[in-house]
Image 1 (cartoon, rainbow, N blue to C red):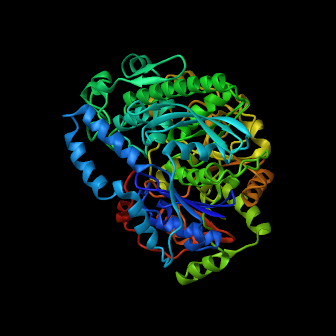
Image 2 (tube, rainbow, N blue to C red):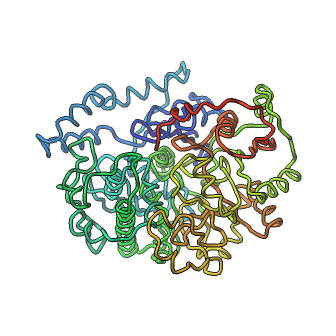
Length: 610
């Protein structure tokens, strides 16, 4: 039986295909349209999933959408009425879209699905609730037979935080916190205030936090959020504008923090760094208290997480260190994209009452669930543009590539199936030598064209992770932060200890400076032989050559661009940046050998800055 899940129309549209409970394919629309966080109907993602599954839409038994639009419309109306006459401008902007399209979503979906070329009757169309889809995406693929499930995001229909008990093939709702009180929207309000883009720049706020001091924590707790001992909370809506306006915060919010929001792309000051550190600390405390409550109330040993807040890997690492649970598992596509997968799994396990097969491993297959390109496709493309290349078997390519990395070159790595979720995990990655003192600066400024403060993650052999980091479990989806072990850290001089903000950036913190953040932490990806043997093999070759079992891994894109999807995307990104080498499966390309093309900087306008 084939079930197609769809998320669309808000942000991060996606599609997922499951077959008799097995995950066959999942992909985000942005990868195909090249529009980051694309919210449009995921026609390309659906086509990709059907192609991977080698079926047509006529072979699908159920189609399921991850949201209930009528309930969401009810929330919008009640919110506007509750705050009236405030919010009229926002109301006028939102209502035409709802009355023309979103309110009649079933009709709209059928119309869009018909463009996929089917002449027969469409399969039954079902709807899950938003947080139900999140919870299903977290629990059903997890390695746990029974677990608590905590979903934290901006807002679904009404819920912004929800707790579930996952048991076998059932998800039993426990309680929720409703809009407008939202940890996700609180974090997004600070994202907006510090000059980053909402629903896109939250991870920048997280990365900025170690540069600051937590001087505003009490200000936040005293004025913005009434946080209870059990982790439940209410926001003081006098300081926020998202219920009635077109911005996240208002002037009262600005007065608390000494002035108006930082302009987009404006200079980052110590204020923004201290604000980032403070809201990160508050977020970690809320998550920790909620998790302890779940443990106490449900009497479970395991926890699953989903929703956009679950992408806060620093908070996840804090939760892991506190050992509230024996283990936690986080859906790698924790945001709205993962709702497509959760909706499909919910139909299989809950609606159709099908059992789960649980073992020691999760069912996400390393998140390598997207399309891939074969040698014929790659060779045809490279020959069509007269691009010089070498074709090498792995026995020759991987040792050569290890030496290329050890020589401090930056490499674009395009291999296997594309990742599902926001993290590059060795399918569509840019890689480098973590021992290099210049690698972070080179990658940020000459490859990614992004802010210099942004940290990079290590990909490390799973069997060696505890040798280098203070963590004793797997982290295959780059969703846990842990500290570099003390023996690899470098002591700071007295003068270095007195530095503030971005002044700290160029001070090496460890013998692995390219992946060690200011607080000696790193966002870790463990690489496993069973899910990505080729990437694992590259790391083994690099270890054999250098003694170091890890490399720098960042997403294969430039700032504002989605992860590359095709050989064309990869080659174009390679040529537009100062990457030194490109690997397309077994094809190795050197920048030095490529035809010289005059670069027009106007291409940078293609992608809206995140």
